[in-house]
Length: 213
Image (cartoon, rainbow, N blue to C red; front, side, top):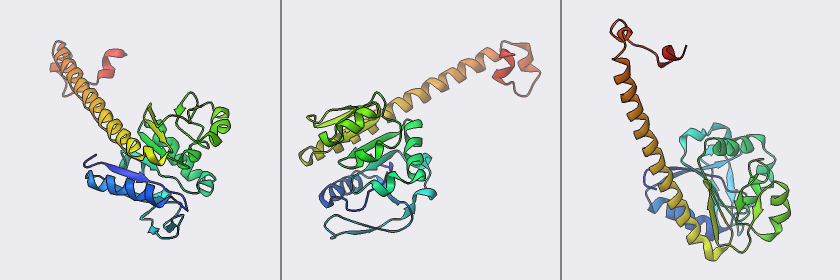
């Protein structure tokens, strides 16, 4: 997680222990996060003991700047009615970046249209809505991590939830490095192939498109 940037999007009334554990774990791992909101504002915890100042409004955030989207819970209804919030989350899905939702944070995913054929660890109260969205709900599981989506809701599983975040981000990094290495290898082979063609010696550069005309 070292050096990673996380988009953290809590709802009003978030659960203090969940938020504290996740943010402290992120910092201890050497990662950084932006606390996002619908606009730059104060986000209050469920007990009222914590008032958090958002450092970035959602419309000023770019998905490309982040490695992970973390939804730690809270009252999600206002966020679920905001098109900019839903578009932001949808772009994370489209970019195949890691998304982690805990507790009521899962409810926000219901409004994205991105849950078809996905498995989620969620409270039974969400089962009907998840199935309607085309997802499968497993209330008895501790945590589910599949296809870059990590979900959980039990306090006793919070450490496992965070461990899955670390594991998934690490695996994604490995896959990305392998893909980059393969691309560089293909590029080198293409350069070798180009040198076999006379036209290569008569032009400063040749586009790969030339050979597919």
